[in-house]
Image (tube, rainbow, N blue to C red; front, side):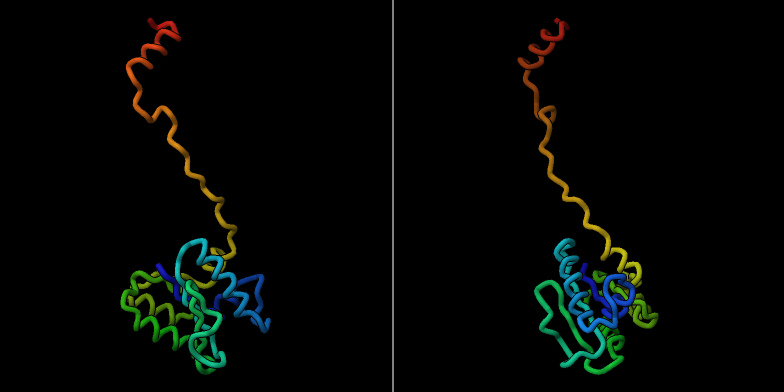
Length: 156
């Protein structure tokens, strides 16, 4: 399930990135790349007014970075993308903007507020779960083994 994220809304909810930082977008993209790698999800993040507008060189195979072409149009860019997604029920929308969230809900997207997603993004990664081998008891036991253990424990 890919994510469509309202970038500056999310930055405003993160304690370790400031909207006043001139590198705030790049710092968020780095965080999102880590999240995408851990969850194996694709992400599209939209920011207000970048020069030039459109897809950014910050994009990679898992995180697409889009800058709106004019100030204050990220919400419109998000709404346009929401309306054009062919399978919206398979997407998660992250925003704090009521109109953007309403547009996503009308299309059947899973919607998450920026503050809720910020908690997920900042949560420590889960410890790696190692695959356990089946214990020997999960394999068939021969009649000879049963006889051996019965004798060993004095049952025969």
